[in-house]
Length: 168
Image 1 (cartoon, rainbow, N blue to C red):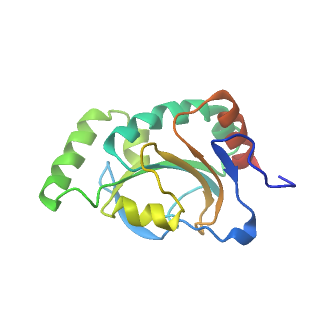
Image 2 (image 1 turned 90 degrees about the vertical axis):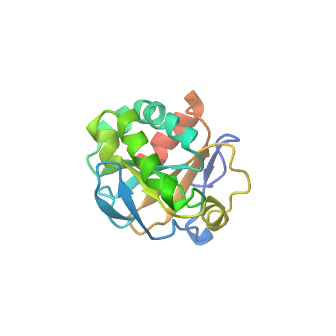
């Protein structure tokens, strides 16, 4: 990433001096574990899918499949998703978590998808996002420093660029 220029319209590499960070927040995985994002990530580098809407979680299996080779190549890599549900009424958040647990059957996904009671707009502002129409995939380290971003579903060029960002 010598020049840190975007490799496509939807993938953006960020220079270290940009200083963009994932906000440190508490969350609860669908399997019921309380976690702190990003410090509880197991990988040195992590792909984090940020779902600004429940429907964005549908991209989790597609991104996981698209990055399968990169994730298998290095055990220091992690893959997670967070659904920002702070704009959902509190009484409805438990119902949403229950419904998602039923909907998402595999244990890996339940352990790696977390619900965060944070406002999507606040997180978007911290990450410089102005549109919440698509999920955002962020490559970050355990300190929360963002190295690359991609929006929307995985595409061939996007996937290759994100895999490179994960592995370097």
